[in-house]
Length: 138
Image (cartoon, rainbow, N blue to C red; front, side, top):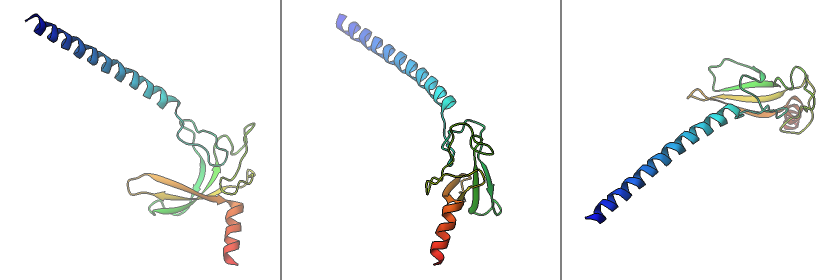
């Protein structure tokens, strides 16, 4: 009979330990997620590759109405590289690798998905896209 009570006591201690460990793990995971969400950077500027903080947006122009699934757009830059450059920032085309002046921009396509999400595909800068068009015409 003593072994039975000893077995029940050991089971109760194991159960309580596992409960407290799960509770403390959940609490620490939620704290880690909050810290990651506060400091996480999800978007980088395609021109200067600077991380965009919450509330910072790219300067861009979108052509044609928003109801079409595929639109042409131009990207001028982010607050770090447009309308003026911050110290140490280099504007570079992600397709051809050429340095861009402040008056040059990226040409991209904006895809409006049925679920409401948007996807941007950079096709090049105003220099390399014109070169591609001239080569394909020959």
